[in-house]
Image (tube, rainbow, N blue to C red; front, side, top):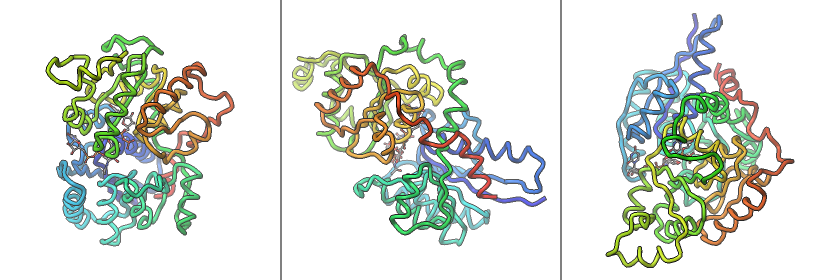
Length: 384
Ligand code: UD1
Ligand code: UDP
C-alpha cells in the first residue's frame, strides 16, 4: 500500500480548530478502501501551552496526539520563531515527509514554511491569500512569507485567490473554502448537547454580548485598550469576555475592567466608574464547544479575532470588529460585520445600529461565503 507522509504543524489555538477538521477528514479517507494511505503526524510547536489554550482542544476535538511537542513557549517574535525553526529542522530532517501542512498566519506558520522549504519539502498552506494590507501586523508578514514559499495555496475565499493573483501567485492556488466552517458544522450540534456554559454563567439566550480581544495592536497599545474598555463600560448589556492570556496581563497592568470590584484607592477607577452602566464579565478562555455555545446565543459579537468574525456569521450574529481593517472583507460587504477599530464612539454606534436592526443580519446576505463545509476533503484530494 502506498503512503503519503504528512507533517502537520500547529501551535496556536485557532490552528487546533482548523487542523481538527483536516485530521478528521484524513481518518475518514483512510477508512475507505483506497490504494493510498495518508500518514499524518502532528507537530505541536508549543507556542500555546496553557491547558485551556491547547490540551482542551486536542481532547474535545479528538485531534490525534502530537507526535512531538517542541515546547518553545512564549517570547519575542525572533526568539519564538527561531526556536521553532531550529527544532523543526531536526524533526523534518528525521521524518522526511512528502508534505508539510501549515495553517493560518502565526509564528508557528512562519517557522514551519521556512524549515520545510530549506529542506526542499513541499508546503501546503491552509488559509492562504488573506491580506490586511497592514504590515505592522505580525500576522501579515507571516502570511506573505508563507504564501510566497508554499507549493499548494489553499484559499478560503475567492478574495484570497485574487489577492494572490495581484501578487503574481497563480500556480498551485485553489479555493477550497474555509476549514473553520467544516468545524462549526460538525460541532454546533455537539455544542448544543454537551456544553453547559449557559447554565454555569447563568445566561439567557440573546441577553448578552460576547467579546474577545487579543490582537497585539489592541493589547499592547494602552490607549486603544482603554478606548475599547470605555466603550464596553458604556454598553448597557452584559458583555461576556473570555480572556486570552495575553490580554489578561495587559488588562491587569492597565487596571482596566476592574470597577466591578472597585478599588477605593485607585484614582482612575473612581473616575471611570462615574458613568459606568455595565462592566464586562471576565472569564477564563473557554473550550471550543463552550465558545460555539456562547456565540450561538449572543445578541452581538465584538472581537478582534479572525476566526470569531466568521463564526459570528455562521451563527447569524452581527459582528463588531475591533480592528482598523479585516481580512474577511466579504463579511463587511454583506453588511454582517462593522469594522470600527478601537474608537469608543464608533464601537458604541455600531452596537446601537445593530440593535436598531433587531440584531438581525441583512436578509439578502449571501450564505455561502466560505464554501460548502467540505473544505478538508478538498484539501486531502489536492494533497493526494
Ligand atoms: C498568536 C498569533 C495570532 C493568533 C493568536 C491566536 C502570532 C504572531 N500571533 O497570538 O495571530 O491570532 O495566537 O490566539 O503568532 N500566553 C500564555 N499562555 C499560552 C499562550 C500565550 O500565557 O498558552 C501569553 C504569554 O504571555 C505570551 C502571550 O500570551 O507572551 C502571547 O502569546 P503568543 O503566542 O506570542 O501570541 P498570541 O497573542 O497568542
Ligand atoms: N475560541 C475558543 N475559546 C475562547 C476563544 C476562542 O474556543 O475562549 C476559539 C474560537 O471559537 C475560534 C478560535 O478559538 O474557533 C479563534 O482563535 P483566536 O481568536 O485565538 O485566534 P484568531 O482566529 O484571531 O487567529
